[in-house]
Structures are given as C-alpha cells and as structure tokens.
Image (cartoon, rainbow, N blue to C red; front, side, top):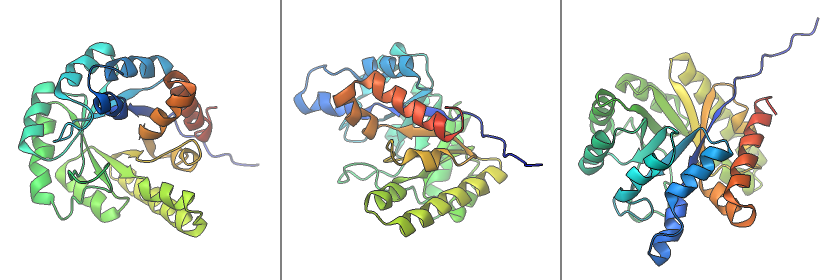
Length: 255
C-alpha cells in the first residue's frame, strides 16, 4: 500500500498595496488610489491587505488608513516600526494585524528581518501593548530558531519569515545557496509551528519563486506586494492577483 501525504490547507494571500501609493506620490495628487487597489485585490481573490505606514510616509499616508478600510472588508495587516508614533497610530486604528518590521530611512525597502533577540527589551512592550489593543501581532524575522524562540518568549502569536535572501539566491543562479536557504525556511517554519506560532512568509516573492515557499506545509499566509504591482503594469492588477493566487494554490495541491 502506498501512503500519500495529506496536502496542506490552502494558504492565505495578503496583497501589499504600498507601491500603488509610491506611484501616486511620485507625481502628487490622488491617482492611482491605494484604496481602489485594495478593492480590486479583494475581488481578485486576496485574503488580506497589507500596508506599511513608514516614518517618512514615502508611500502609504495617514489618510490612506481610513480609505483602505472603507474600500474593503478584508483584514488589514499594518506593517510598522517600533516607534511611539506608530504605536499610537496602531492603537487608535486597531488593525486586524500589526506586523513589527525594521525600518531605516535610507533603505529602499525592508532589507532584512527584525533582530528580536538583540532588541528584545525594545520590541517586547510593543508586542504586549498591541495584543492588549486587540491586534494580532506578528514579527518579521529571519528564518532562525533563535529569533523564533525569542518571539515565542515575547508572546507573539505570529512570525513572518523573511524570504528575500532565498529569492535573491534563486535569481543569482546559486542553486546550492537557494536550496540551503529554503531548508532554513522549512526548518524555521516547522520549529515555530511546533511551538504554536502561526507561520507567515514574505518579501520579494515572484511567480517563479513562490512555489517552493508556498509548499512548506506550516506556512499559513504569504504577503506579496512589489512583484504583483509590477506585473499589474502589464496585465492589470486583477489578473496579477489571480495569477499569484493560482500559483500558491497549485503549490499547496489545490490547483
């Protein structure tokens, strides 16, 4: 008798709409509208909307928070730095989820995971206060057992594993390096899941790189933005979201 491995449940797709606002802000004015992008992503099969309100407001702005909420009933995942200003905004806004991320003004985008082991004393109060405020807290971290263990000790119910290094290695043609990094992701996901932490992944994922990551059975959510918005320039946002939704489902055995 041949034993077949049970396919993992469908994974959620969170669509990050930040770069719709990036294009808007490049010229000023109100177009294109991030709130409209949220509504289109919802209709196309997204399970959540991710927005990152940065200190310098380089893309999403304060007024977008209410506009996005009005445009869709999907849960909103607010990415935020560990600053008093962002904490006050998040506690007032009460997003479904708050994802704590590293943030440096000089970077183009988030360039790595939050080092919660080194920054425990800084990060832990944010986890506690956001949870008390009713948001599901996640920590954007490297795929490391040490980082996951500290996240668990802080009481974070969710971690989002940084997939950027894996994607870079794939596109650099470094198969051995990519395989090693994928193994790190798999081991970190299993380790976190064993400890009751919900596993999310994100950063840099494309149609070509999402399959191996989405196939990790412990992964429950993938947050993808930049690539989807880039593809939308050629095929439209609805088609780009639908295609990413399809690729994830295929990887999970639901295609």
